[in-house]
Length: 147
Figure 1 (cartoon, rainbow, N blue to C red):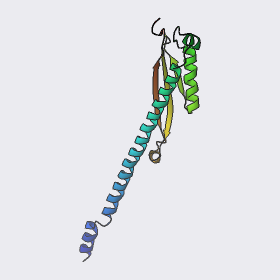
Figure 2: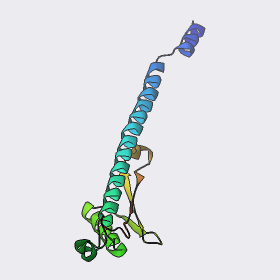
Figure 3: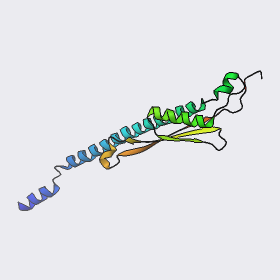
Figure 4: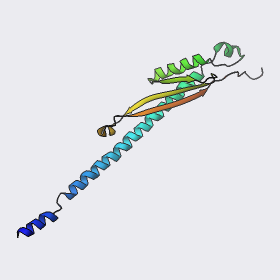
């Protein structure tokens, strides 16, 4: 009789489903967390790219008004372009860098930010880096038609 009780308790699998369900629930929450935080990080990256592109475009519109109004040429002042791009970043509430190429014809805007995770913070990942890039080619030496 004692041997039969020992065999029953050894072969008893009560509680086995509970462990299985706990592991599956944990894995499911992890997958949902990766989907939510991954998707939100992608949206934050798209927003950073958009703002960087708009800042570069704002810089590309910093033309020299004297030549443009008289119709002699449409030239972009590189320093004014960098200032306009930086002003756009400031107005959008973004932080980033504005760089001019060595020849002064290309304006590059890079935004760096961080996304605060919702689910991944449980496993110790509190933020994910986000970077956005935008480039504009500054016009030089363009003259109106007919001149």
